[in-house]
Image 1 (cartoon, rainbow, N blue to C red):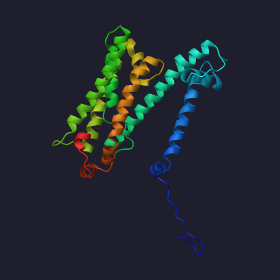
Image 2: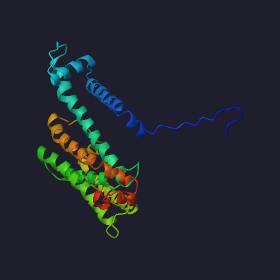
Image 3: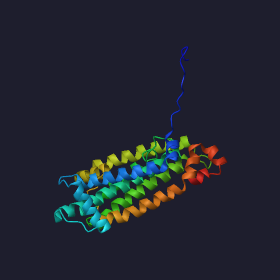
Image 4: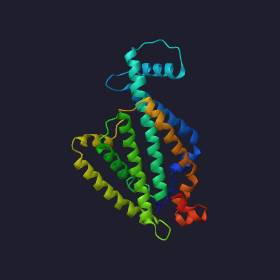
Length: 264
């Protein structure tokens, strides 16, 4: 209560979603500006420092075909264009994919803290990659495809297993889905630990995969990964209305016309 002579003022906080709806253009431009700053910084900083002016000039010459005076060495241009720029762009594309995947898990599971580990997806991918490392393949191209192929198969197998085991009467209740996901994820994590124990000299390669790195990023690999991630992101974006309905609960989503089992 307010004391006599005082005026009680109630302030209503502005929700992030309301702010996003009011100023979508401003927030979008701010995000693009932040990405550009991060891109220039990521390309410029490193063991060999490149001045921001030279970074912008190299990018302008390469991307826009601008006729600019060359104030940098050929080695600097190679570092910027062939080494650092593919890594930075790959990191951005991977970040986009992780953000979309995280938002999808949060919508499906109605949990703001949900991540790929909840349903065992990450553990399945890690176990698949560890198995690929243990397979004695010496051809680099085949080894690269086998590693990522088995990681994808492991992640997909984990999700299918969790969904199958959690079904009760033709439905997959959220609680059952989460509990089954944690159980399957724990089993897969135990399998990963066993694979690491048996890996011997390949343990370092498994650790390198688990920690993640962009050292192997290149224009060719970016051209192969970016379309897949962008296509998957667009497909998920097309289901945004259904995901928003699932956030309200299964019954409410069903009343709104969402086919809950199909969307899951």
